Length: 456
Image (tube, rainbow, N blue to C red; front, side, top):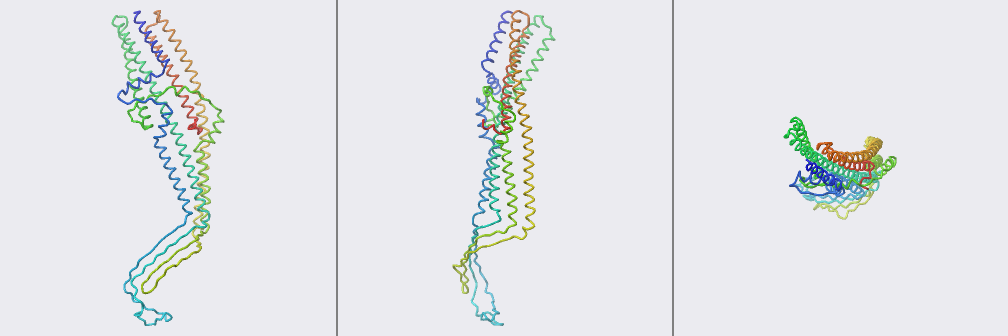
């Protein structure tokens, strides 16, 4: 019996040493679940870089930027000359032509027999028009397109911040899921050892059969918990692989050292000021409002005439009748759409309504920002306070294990009490590690809300 106690104590000492030196017990837990898959150690920063590189959301954002850039070029193209070339070749039958005007050499009963035979014609026209004035519509169109381009760029930056936070969240979820597998598996291991001891006691008549069955039932429940924990870990691993563009079967091993960094927390008022200056969705809305204001002026341009410098060249040839060459014209053209007098009012009303809508969206976004900042700031403070509690719990669990081990050495407690104390210590250690990860996540959520997560 003494040798068995020594064996138990040595096993516990080895386990505690491993936990104290490195929380890397996560690695074998993952390898047990998917020993046939590729294994990849990955840091949080590496995960963020891969997430940004392979994000379909960011690819779509870049496509929207390219679209907005093309719209700017299209708006600028309205300043360029308009040029058109047209020409035709015509074939006629033998028409009967009678000239009624005596001044042209005809007579009232002329049959046109003396008129030249015309059976074909060819002509070409080249026109150029350079806009000089369009009521400011072209200029305002360019300005509006540029504002929307800036908004699209800011939207892409906002999507990037969201992608970074999403990657961090997935990384921490995988870490926590793996940690849960470690705890549950260790609990199962201790429970099976306890069953082995109780089984020997039952065989010698020192333990009732019913007590052994209760312990074995508890072991079965823990086995089910292991299956659930491993399933959750595998799902988190697959989600991470899809997010990073890695093969689904790749086993990712997270790095717990990512959660040991110190963080400096500013005042809530500082984060509110930072958010107003750096939140990309807020800045994007401001550019959209400028575009809407410019759109009002662009709509008003319809009330003005358009003026253009025009020029052209005409050439024609009608055999036996007419030949035209070197016919060049140049001038100034004025065009005014009278229908714009009553049609433009609705366009202006639409543009003004759009501006009011954006102003309301800005006010709503400001309210949501302040609420989220307060909520995420309080969550960060709470997460930091939890660390103090978990550190105290680790100290208590460590002392409890020391006392229990001393009692076990003096035959004052049984093996079950010693193993339970060991599991409690392991749980406390992992709870503390998970709490540190939660603090990092809460801090990153606050930075994302303030619009500076990509700058850290």
